Length: 69
Image (cartoon, rainbow, N blue to C red; front, side, top):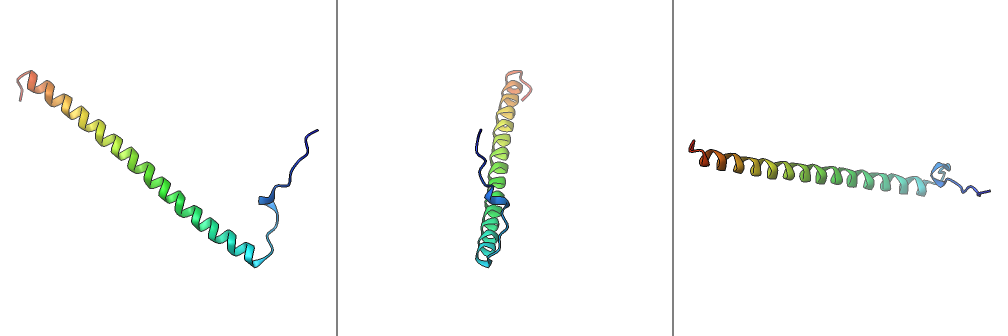
């Protein structure tokens, strides 16, 4: 039979120092969450720009080959 551990995240926080620590930690985690979101958005935007550039290059090359341009 496996022994169950204590879920410390659900324990009641009583000391002011602990409350202050949790508030600052949550604020810090929120900042990092925003930073990760912007980094992911930047990667997606960069990938889309690269794909559009490759597609435009291929289209221009085809049009040039067919004598349209």
